[in-house]
Image (cartoon, rainbow, N blue to C red; front, side, top):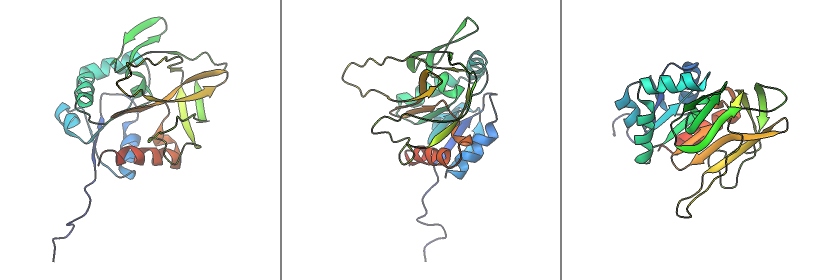
Length: 220
């Protein structure tokens, strides 16, 4: 007889990057329920070697960037992406992937994986808090099977305008947008191994769980 467990599929290993931002335990539990083996850590070697890296984030852009720099997060993210290794950013963890953030007139440099500026939303009601639909581009793997669902948002800042320019040799990111009031903002991005959402999948019920499963399926 074969040994017990032989032939069973290995659960992908995910690191949730612990840099002092947000309710990290909810992200850990959500990713575990979606089918991954999860470690919450700031250890750079573990973050580099995991099958997937999840970068959470809540609060102020500048504070999140300071926390990331303290654990050399931008370096870890950059090295993973250079090797085609998956990264998922959530909420401010998405925002810091852009070039810069502007809060109360203060500009803070981001990880600069994408051009673009995170700034305060101009909608009549801010913060944008609660459930909202998303406008999903054709070919999205992130939203496979859940393009018509709603997701949970809580934020006052976002990327309001993002004009993509490509050289024709690389595939342009797939950009999902959401309307709040009279304003449209970037609510998710798929760019090869780099995925990100402005909303919280871990707070978005069955739809959020399905999105996390879609991401984990790319780690196998």
